[in-house]
Length: 163
Image (cartoon, rainbow, N blue to C red; front, side, top):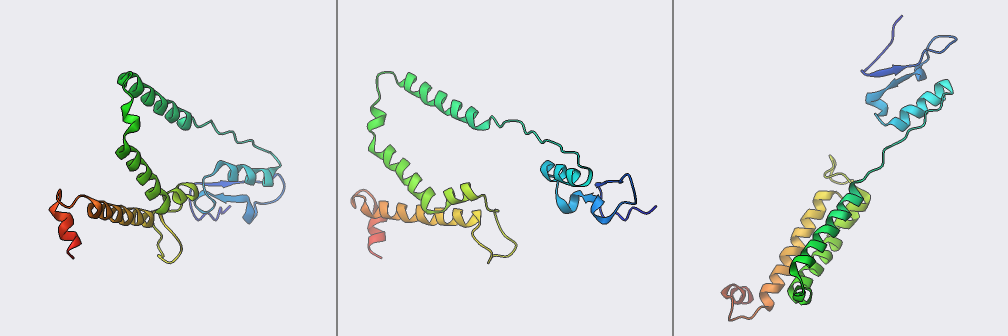
């Protein structure tokens, strides 16, 4: 008997009656390693339904708890001195980071999950392009900050304005 396998590992269903057909071979290299796909293939071939149960992902609640613990620890260590909440520079920096992340496409990348780079550069947005936009916007805002600074403080801003 010849198995006609092109790659390994491969699952082969040997039916109760007759010889295995072309669809009775499940090649992992071609169809993928997903448990749901393999369970669907087994159900199609043998009428045996396999329930795939994934364990819960505790990374999100763990990170939220860690963030709350760090914030709570900082507030506890600062005691009654909460003047850092009135720091305009800190709030401006946080707002700038938020604006840069949103305008550069980082949130779109986080939601959609595109590949870091494509083999064909004309097939859509990639993650690396978001980093390029983020860097360009950051340089732009740093330049604006230098221009709007007090001219007597920095010689670089006067040079920049003289261009």
